[in-house]
Every structure is written in structure tokens, then in C-alpha cells.
Image (tube, rainbow over all chains, first blue to last red; front, side, top):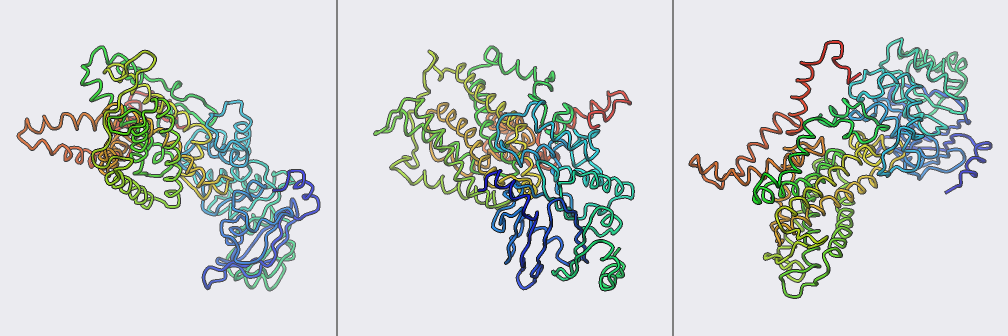
Length: 260
Length: 356
């Protein structure tokens, strides 16, 4: 395993994420075909495409939930293709889920505390944390950052949908994230909640890059600097938001298709 | 959700310590006083055959509660682990079978605890590859296999006869076989295990286990090694079950394959579910109900002109009633009753305060 120093020195030179020829097969179905993608450190990118375009499969390959059938994945210069999810998470990769994946029978603060604990030592500790514990503070700060302090002791099962989506983001921010994968964070949110989401995403520190899957173009265009278009498991266009919006092929396939 | 209610009231979180001290309620104090002064008011029969027995079975059921309530893993092999520990103490320590090893009691206990954690780790390693009903099936298979092995193996386990003549040790100048000392010994172990489980449930290890129960995939995505964590939970539960098993061997002075039979495994499951797997006190309540039924149902049935051997029917009906009316067991009924009481007496502006 690389030392922290080695990894940090690699940050300057390497891309945050580099996919080379990633293919993922589910039996005869090719969910991803020869996908190559480069994301710079701190870059904010949207992945767009219709249902079944392979966006979520792409996320699953990057996080290691489903290893790719072929191809390589580099995270800040390090080849993580064969790493289990937790090893990638410990290196600063995070994701949120399309359908909230929280711990309903634990409190809001406990949910975030687990996220903080997951990327630090003492995961097996039998000693209860004190109020002054650094990780408890970190968890409280994250709960604050996603505007949930007032309900931090409530059970997640009791939370409203929009609050659960905000908690999802807090979990992804725990530890020292370097690249976050947001899977449709705005899905099902009210206009007010969307505005709050945009504010939370825009106020993330500049060194945290993210890739966002988003159907809502208004949200996507406001929070990213680059867009990747996917179709049938392949990447077919990449560029700045204005270029993508103006592209006739994209308009025909996606924007004109009544999906927006 | 008994656990949910009690924690919501204390507004406890990762940060708060010793929730059982903050939530000190009159009922708990009353129970503590009663169990402590029990030897002054109860006969030796009630001390050992009712309460002592309930503490021991409750301790074994507690190990199942830890796995099932916090880890979402229903293991039928907890009796197997407890019985294994009992067998180790019986085989290595002083016993009435020719060729006994005669180790001092503390060395035999130490060996039993260490070997039980190994067995717990093996059971866990096999069981965590499965989920839900398949966990039950694989642990049931392990329990059945161990039962038949002890039944057939004479070289180590002395087969169907089992091992008898095991003395309860004498240490600190106390003969722990006498009813009152044995009562306090079982009470001490039960309270120790209960405190340990309550404490660990709020420590990172226990919180993470509950996270794994709620959403294993997300826990992996947060950096936890889910299967390793589950195996560690089996090891911790094995230690608790082993303590209960060792006490049972001392209490009876013998151990035979019946102690690790499938029906014994199901009894422990019934105890944990009837008491409630949402709170560490549940298994002890379940054990007390089971022991009282098993001891007195016979007399009651006979008094009503029924076959005394039907006491299992009573337990079965009670089990059905509990899972039907209160999935959280007796402790869940209690929590609901208390909440209704609080809701009725609470001033309107304070209603719902505890839940934010």
C-alpha cells in the first residue's frame, strides 16, 4: 500500500479519476462498453443520458460495487481496479445513492458518525466516544452543513424525503473526500429543496470534485463545468455545458426527447 | 421499537455515554433492588431453579439478541457455542468420568472461553456468507451436526451419557455451589453481560453492527469491512454464550448432548423473541417467563385436569401470541404501554418533544 506521502505527491500530477476501456457485462447485456473518462482533481462533472444509458453502472464500477469486466480504473494515479469498495472509500472516493441508502433505525447524528468512523481507525472500537471526540465534532459539523442540526437526534426512518436526501450528502462528505459520485441527488425534491441542494453543492470546498448524474438540466447546468453524455453504455459526447446544449445530436437524442 | 423509544427519550447519540444511567427509571431501580435482596425473601428452590436458571438461559439468549437485534443475524448456534464451552469445562476440569484431565477450574474456564471464541469465529465465518433465512438454516445445520457428534462420540464427549460429576468451584473462600452464592454468581455474570452488550451497542463496534443490519451495502460504501465486522460480532456473542454455558454446567454438575440439541436451540430463540430482541433486557424477561412456565405449567395443567406434559403447548401458544401482537416481544408491549401512559399525562405543549 502506498504511504500517505506518496499518495499526496501523486495528487499534483495525476488525474482524480481515469477510466480506460471499461466494459461491464451482465450476461449477454453490455451495460458499459469501452468507456474512457478522465476527471481532473476538483473538477465538477455531470453525466447525462436516458434510462439504461449505463450511468449508474458506471458509478458502480468506479466504486467497486460491480467490478468491471475489463478495463482499468485509476484513482489519483493509483490502479484501484481490483480494490474492494472499502479500500476505494478510504482513499477519498464517495458516492450517494439514487434511492436513499441510509440506516433508518439509527439517529441522524449516528448515521453521519458511522460515515466519519468508516474512513478512520477504530472501526472495531468497543469504547464509546466522548462528547469531545473529534469524530463526533466532525459529524456534528457535517449535520450542520446539510442543515439538519435541529433534527440530529431523530431516527432516520422518521425523516421527510428531502431531509433524507440531504443526509445522503452529509454521509458522502464524511472523512476527507476527494471525489464524490452523486446519483440523482435532486430526484423527487421540491423546487425549494432543489434550491437548497444547489446551494449545498456550490458551497463545497474547491478541492472536492464530483460527478453528478442528474436528469434535471437546471440543476446540472448550475453546478458543473463539464458534461459527459452517455447512450447505450457508451460515451458519445463530452464538453462544456454550453457546447452540449447547443449540440444538434444531443438535442435530438436527449434534450428534445422530452426527458428534461 | 423498545430500543428506539428508550433512546429517543434520552436523546442519546454517538456522543452520549452510559444511556442506562441517564435513563434511570423507577422500574429499573425496583428490579435492581428486588434481584439483590432476593436471597432474603425467596427459597433456595426459587433462587436456583427459577432465577438462577433464568439468568443463565437469559445470558445465552442475550448473545442471540446481540446478533439478531443489532446485527440482523438470527443464529441458532448460540446454544451450540454455550454447550461447547460447557463441554470444554467438563472435559478439561474435574469430572466423574474415568480418565478426566482434572485441570484447575480457572484454567478450564480460560480454555473454554478461548476455544469458544474460535468456534464463534468459525460459525460466523460460515454464517456471514448468507442472509436471512439461510443464516438460520446454516446455523441450524451446525447445531444439529454438533448435537449428533456429541451423541455419537465417546472418546471425547462420552456419547449419549455425557459427562457428570463436575463440581462448582470453590474460590474467594466461597462454596459457589450453595444456593445463595450460586444465585449471586449467575446474577453477576448476567448483569456483566447485559452491561457489556448495552455499552457496546453505543460504541463504534455496536453502532456499525446496527448500520450493517440496516444497510450492509452502504456500510461497505462507507469504508467498513462488512463480513469481518459480522464475524467479530459472532466472536463477541460467543464469549457471552460461553459464560452462560459454563454456569449451566456448574449448576447441573453435568452436561449431556440434550443440552446442545436442536430443541434447546429453539428454546433459546423462543426466549429471545418472546422477551424482545430490541433491548438487551428482553432475553432475561423471556428467560424468566420460559422458566416459570416450564416449572409451574405442569402443576397448573394437572390442576385443570390436563396432561402435564403439554407445557410446551402453553409456551408455543404464548410464542404465537407474542409474535402476533408484539413483534418486539414483551419489552415492546411494555414500551408501548409506557408511551401511551406518557402521552396521556404529558402537557400538550410538550407532546412529541422527545422526538423533536
